[in-house]
Length: 298
Length: 298
Image 1 (tube, chains in turn red, green):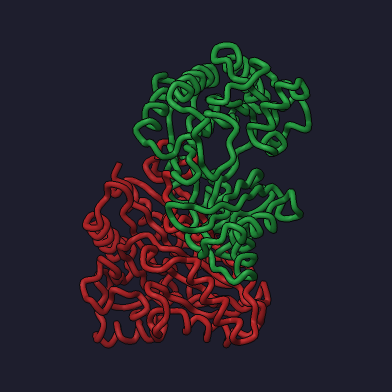
Image 2: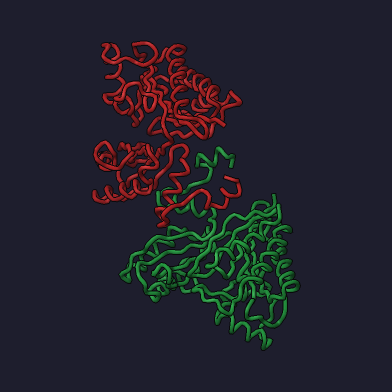
């Protein structure tokens, strides 16, 4: 079957009733399955994971964005995670027989509908980017929503879809197509966010660190802990076990142990198999070597 | 479905054509699936993994043993792995809705048929053991086939099924029921088997090491390497990542690095998830957090 995965990030991580209402909009279509809802009060952000047939999924995502915009006002938003919109980012990931070209096509259709039907300025990123500078969403995030809104108002930056002005309550939405990735957070045994930022800088690709790794450092008020928040964009490039090892080494150099880590949303099997293989010193570990996978005929 | 897994260990790991003929006997029944065949020339042993409906699987295992006995003569056998029979050991593992009581019942039926139809002395072990001393097959292996045959001939040891004399070409077969386990080998960067034996002794439960761990040290002629060969009997008791760490630490204390490791046969998913969780510092990693598992509805 041609399945598309969507991992919309919504700027609400505290009011769980509201998150449920928003998430429910994804489940109205029988051809869309909501697989995971991960909310974080400090990030003030919820990561939803849904899969579906491409046309049904695009429709459900428009509904999701409408439900989120009706319920969230970005002007009072205060999470540690950077965000540009009520629905901050909507990555589409091709699964199984679905191609990246089809995911890009869906990103364009989704972006067009969000712009026209909901009046949200939309930027395409990742494989769907029309401008190579926008392949990485970080290039749009620099300076935050204020800088982005000013550039749009001044005409120096033009959204791919939607109006050329930003409603500060709604912000802008990044819509993209990409390969599966891992969203992963590691706590540090310190309250010092500066250490988390230093460690993040040391491990991320942009600053000479590990291939395919994005990382930011935060302080989590509710846990009273600093945290390194990681996106591993290319699971085949770097083992997640290596990322954790490097974070532990960089933290230790600064006199800090690492605490527990957590996955945000779902993880591609490849990343788990590689982490286990690394820990066990296996040259390779394949799904076919796992009893349950073989029994399931996978 | 009530599925039973069988992991027969056959004392032939060099003549691959012969292994194929023997393995084919398991595939004659449409209700039995052969999932894996792992042969090792130094161990001179093949570990087969098959699943099937209990009655069909018992029948296929009798066929397998007959095919193996017709083709293998134990008197010329020279593998590093200890063995008591042409078919050395046949563990039965209940899966899914199958109970341990049913696996024990099948072990008794299999043992009875091997004794009566093939004339092989059979000892029941594990959950199927009638004598608590025989729960661990190692208690029967001490002294090797020679000592065991003498004890049987002298009448001090009585097989649970089959004749009270041992054909030295065929040996005896251990038939048991147990939980899923992991068979795992770790190479050492040395040719010194004594170091492998010391490391094995340091990590195995019997000598005060890790819970649920059996281990032996070997020298592998074809690889020119020493090896620690591990059975992790209780996946929930000890993480496989801990086993590898401990082996690495014990080897390093003796000035030896560990080389690549290998799985023998299939591995229970629980062991892989736990190894990955340990490597990633996750408090827990569940199948439901893996995208592919969720898509497969597991």
